[in-house]
Length: 175
Image (cartoon, rainbow, N blue to C red; front, side, top):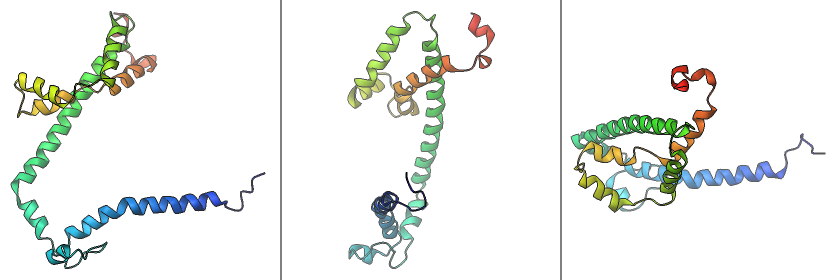
């Protein structure tokens, strides 16, 4: 019988190991944060460890004062929001169609889609397709190539038949 009153060796050893993993993982981030707030001379002399020396925010003022950083931040938000919306719409429509047993060539299309999980075209063919479509240097050249994730499509296709009957519209399901 296991005695639950005394902690065994496993919780102690795992706590020590996990603490070491946390320290080793967080140290580079803490070090770079300290370097970013330290004076130039201390950084060049490699005197920074965990705590900043010669507190300095000149670089933050320089970076945040540049209008290009705010344009990049805006682009990140727009690309992420638009990419997520397009991906969700296309993935859910494709998954719903593939989940319908009445769809012609459903198994063949599913196998072709799964094939793309194992053999992707790569960066250069993707660029050539984007260039041939005239999408280089546009928002669509960034958003559309990654619009449908095969894994998400398969996952969502599996979800649709398992959804409760009350979610389904009778008009759609009787057609």
